[in-house]
Amino acid sequence: MSSSASAEDQQFLALLTSRGFLSREQAQKVLDGSNEHGIESCLKTVSGFSEAEIEYLRQTRAMREPRIPGYTIERLLGKGGTAEVYAAKRNKDFERVALKILRPDLSRDKVAANQFVKEAKLLQELDVPQVVNGMRVFRFMHTLILEMERVAGATLLDWLDQGRKFSEAEALDIVCEVAVALEGMREHGVIHRDLKPGNIMLDRDFTVRLIDLGFAGEGNSGGHGEGTTMGTAAYLAPEQAKGQNDLDGRADIYSLGVTLYQLVLGELPFVASDDKELLRMQVLD
Image (cartoon, rainbow, N blue to C red; front, side, top):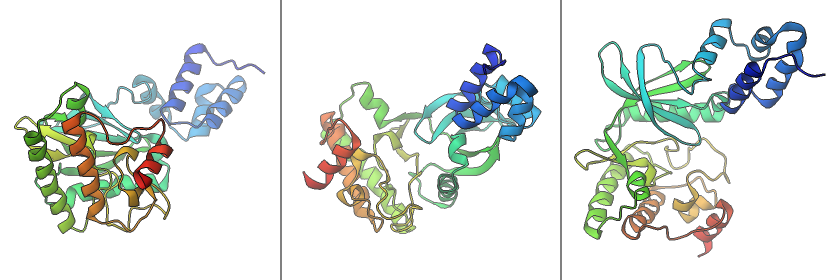
């Protein structure tokens, strides 16, 4: 039976699905039931959203153009596999902040949600000048949002993508600052686990700031089981590539070495067509 949902409603459901607010199965249930009950009623039943929440999702294109109470959203700063980060202004005091919004589908995943909250707690508690500060974490529209200090500048990955190569002296200055940050984290019993150019920012004074602690934690408490590989394949230490959980600061030092190599030469030491081959190369080559 064909659906009576309008083209606009079908596009809306497709957007909700692509943005993680609905699974494909849920979207199909809404379409199947729309002939008898109408799309709004079916959407409320299947998703648990209220009428006001559905209207909000329509107006913001499923939070592609988010409106967060208490903040003025200025622009998208970046997006990754788990979250999007927006430049924003806090309305009560006009403080410029960054809002990291967890993907809605991941907010329903207990491990991912716990890891997000853990990152927020680390950013709030760590007293390391080179690590960006976290202010608070809160829930809105069935997902989690982390308010962080906003750092004006660009990541090392941004510089590399623009074709910038760093002199050995420049690169050494940068990695030495990162090493100081890693030592400060180690003193708090924390290792980074995902050190790479995309997580290292240079502010306007060319001071290093670490901006993403999504996989950070104690060496044996990443929130994932033994055999689970966390981090970015091209930068992983061999023990990480093997899925070991009993990590220490040496894993971060390896990733920092890969970053140094890339800053100076403009390329990675290992390149492969897929992550599986990259992990093999990290362990065996």
